[in-house]
Length: 306
Image 1 (cartoon, rainbow, N blue to C red):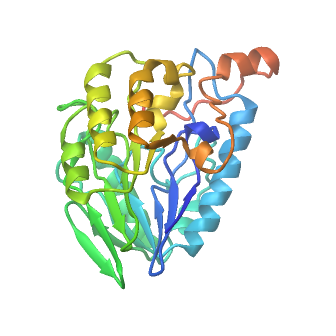
Image 2 (cartoon, rainbow, N blue to C red):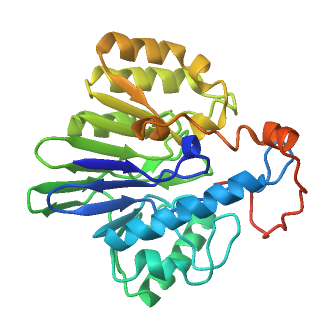
Image 3 (cartoon, one colour):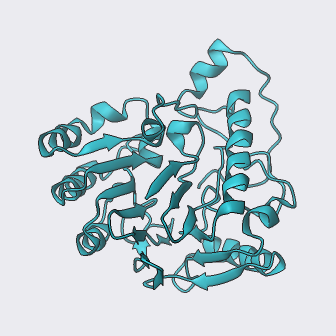
């Protein structure tokens, strides 16, 4: 199994885009990239904008190779929109290059909040225009040659009842490795993602870690991360919300120590690529101080959430 990180906070953008290839199938998980319109009272630094364009180019390239593309949920850093956006490095045609003619395994709108449902309907229409095959994936399973792809039941995006809604995770097994992609569960802060992982018995876990910069529910998240480590994967990739905090390693030190004792490698997307973390959003104030630039980026009329 080939695992290639594409976009994520350690690579300088909001994303969890990941490319996975087995002998049988090529999958691009969550083909999105975005930047926070405001962080520390500042718009994205020019270096962030440049990085978003670079990651978007890689997403387009890998999407054209992929057989399957996923949409775990409808926050803007997890799918390619059908409209132009400087924050997401898209024009009005980018979505066709990403989704055109592809099979798209996507979250059902059945249990989503209003904002995610609205985005879902816009994307569903765009997928139809692009000639994509849209499949609601919640709880489903697909066998392609010797590879099995399995989707979880809906999981909370953070604490139960959260206004940020629900997501789905995906597991890929090729008979040798069992990778589980668990985006935006914020820890996980709830136990359901751990239940799914116990069923799959993963060798590689890619999980959206806790938003330590918001300062809540950390104890529960750390306990669930410890349970994941005890499942015995050889690699645990910590990603996304966790890496919007420059001090993230210090705040989860107990988890890192537990992983070391259990012989579990802990990595970031950048680490998987053999690169150092570039937490450009978390560094935004420092970037403006070191590399002054006019803060003139026009607002796009979108909320500042994911």
